[in-house]
Length: 620
Image (tube, rainbow, N blue to C red; front, side, top):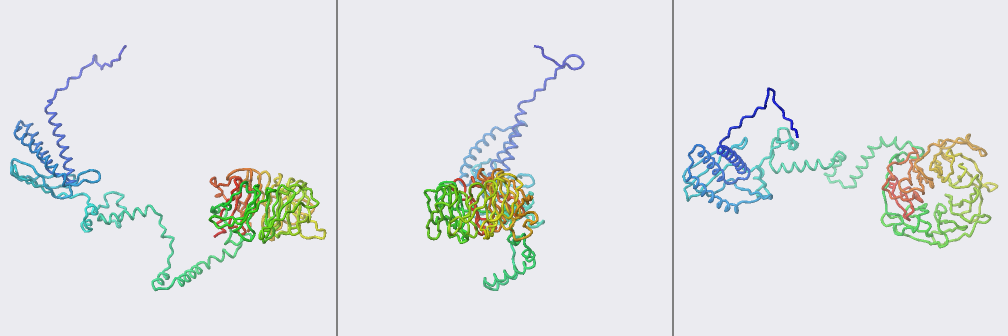
């Protein structure tokens, strides 16, 4: 193996001279002196902080003198032996003093007195004084020595750095004498009440620390408190609470009289601005499930609020049971239940504005009418002159005059609400998939596979046959699956998931009605919708407006979770973005309904639960 050797310039390598061997005894003496100096400094700090015995200091000075004598060659062996004896006696005395001293929570021994006694033997009777320097402060310690059998008394003027008045049992006057600097660090400067303040006592220091902590951990709300000087004066004078409330309402009325008038004097699309719903965000509050006491054993096909009482609703489904519940916000007790052993319920609705009866139908050729007050159930075996074997899709008119079933081959069957006999039928092109009444109950809208929306006038005519007064072509071009109407809008839900919003053809406000020149009773006119809502990605199986038409609910049975339901702000045609969320337990939404005053929103899902939410805009 060849190793590379670097040669210096000028020939061969030049060896370094050997270092001179220093005296081992001198190096040991220097290390000893350095160690003694460090020990002396540590003992000085302990004395200043904790007030320890000074015997250690004196021993350190004597050892330093011994080392100094050894360097000069005048080391006294007898003196060394005497110091050793004195050290042993001092250790015994210090063990005796431990019992009189205290220990802190960390196990550190603290001498709590400013003066202390220690026993030590000396050969000479003299008085010694020396100074201990600790940075900028100088502390004088006086040592009074005695003979070989005497006692040594030592006093010091050093003061403890911190004194806890509660731990020491001292009074507040002694605690107030302790000062804490407020300018030593930048954090403590924040506790000053003025720039020229440099220190405070311990009690004030603790109080300011607490105030600072409360201020930094809490949000100040004092700016939101409105106080009336005159009301405070009245309270001091002893005026009762009724007069104060009257004064507060008067002052509030005077404050709002000038600014509130422009807000309430203008309406937004027929809705007073004071009750107008704000777009983008809606406030809902989860309530106990409406059917909490007795959930459905199958999917909730229908959920309906009573038309007059917002605290009463019913649920129905494939478990063949109709259940009534009273909404109290706590347990929502069950009021009544009716079981239909021969018919799984697919559709149900209150009959008439009084809600005195409930009509129920399913995949059967017959249907039931249940009297709510008496509980009597009437079975209608079949509809005369009609071949339908399934009446699963059904609605009732707002006035209770008609019951409408979706039949075969584009037919819609109108049954008289009082006699339960066939009243009339309507026929449209293609198959009928969806029907809906106008809020006034004068017109019936139907749509289906051809994608067009038909408007029928069902008022009594000489021929007693409803007349198609308008036909609206939906631009989507796919099968229409659901319809909903309000006083201002018409919503059309397609099988593709697109929901188109049109102005209502039967609106009383001309700003929201179609121009008559666009349509005729015999021709179709294609009109662009106001808005195309594409938030549902599957079939729009249901649409529902609330009582004042400001909210449109659209849902799909074919998707689970947040994508199954959307709430739309009707005036801006935008979806509320804050609800539902990924944590909303919707499941597969099968049915939905608003209470008469829109205080509640009920949602029936595939798990048999009827979720209940409070709409805070209307509840407040």
